[in-house]
Image 1: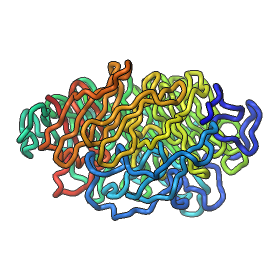
Image 2 (image 1 turned 90 degrees about the horizontal axis):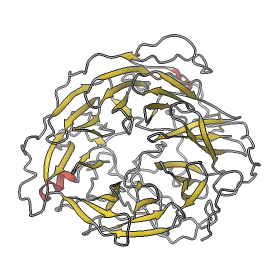
Image 3 (image 1 turned 135 degrees about the horizontal axis):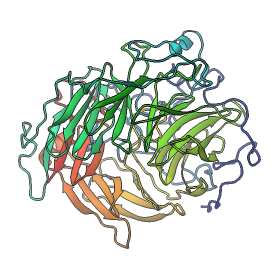
Image 4 (image 1 turned 60 degrees about the vertical axis):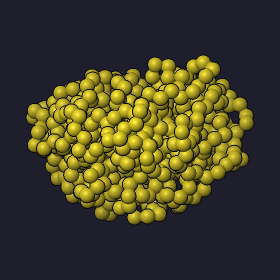
Length: 606
């Protein structure tokens, strides 16, 4: 393995280009979402032409119908350790010279490729098709005839707008924040097993040292085809969860109704994955119920009180810049709304527009965003369809949109995930060479290191294969100096590997206790917090591992009751958090099966 240079070579990090430009050379004409040759990947939210089988992010044929039993935390799935192709390293040289593993064609439910490639959910897949979703982004291609019409027609409900042209936006209207009514309570709250009630008898037969199920809530009614249940936010003594058309708030300790639920006019299609600095979130819902409806209606919530704040509609940015699906990102007090080729930033507290991010240079279009406390990362696609096609990473000031630094990605490489924003750790893929790379950067945007560990990693990054969601991964944690990734495992014990951000080399690794896979949740108080999956007759666990020193052994923090293992296994695409000594698991997707007694959220504690 060759040692990467202290800084990337001219022309950006990534493999050598066919025609590397000189330092500071502007990109060629074209751009993300610009017209492409027929057969290119479809538009953002528009009809797609599936690429060939296999390759990073390529759509794979389902191995079974979507209405099969759902995978859960204790069942085989690509969650923390979906089966992948065997190694060893010996493939095409990677961005900095050392060999990268090859990726072979696969299918849902079949062994998946890549040693560090974030895995998608296999079939048994989601109970029904998801529409959009938080952070969904797609490359835009030339669309003709009726497809163009579909981009510019808004179906269903339209919220208040004022007239006027957006700056350079091709005559589109600006959204105006409107004060909504008081918190809605039109829907009946789902019954919650709170205050010691346990109608499903999940705490019966608890063994010594086992925690208990503190409370749980059944899933709300959903269509037979299923429904999204994105996000989970914890603030103070309140846990908030979105599902289908509603936003629920539970007491963290007992599961009682904290506020709401609030019912929205149409189904939820995107949410801010994180809350703002002042405990605000924004939820997007569809403009109507027709096939031409867009994911462009915004509603702000105060997590502490449930008060509905400002609301508004996201306008299209112009031809091939649709708000059919959008991406919501929070950085401090800034909300960034991403379309297919642009982004608009708002003050999340008031809804006041802050700035637009549009095409820059000769042909660079914003393609995806990732947010942190005071950092906002923008990934742009440049020169699409030209010999200078490439991507760029920019660090923005979230308050002003000013570019702090720009890092060019070498031709052929795509920024697929951001494992962390502070420090910046990105996962890149090369479809043509069927390789992957994990690179880290300094605060000033210079290349810092790339992962050199010869291992199969398996963070869980969602099941969608035609969308880019930079911050959609679970089972990965990062602190100032170290990246923590789970090794591949299906139903047996695995390891978590600590990788130095300084040189990309392994620092240490720790084996999962027992015979079940575990994955990082977060780093807190000098310890790595990890979740161990349940088996069919053993509850899951929460463990901690010291990140410093010479001893890295797991210490049990919470051991869930065996009587709840069956239910704990049923959370499809579950969202996990451990805070205040309690473990919270919520579903990311509802099946819509009325007979399954599906749970929306569950809390464990002593």
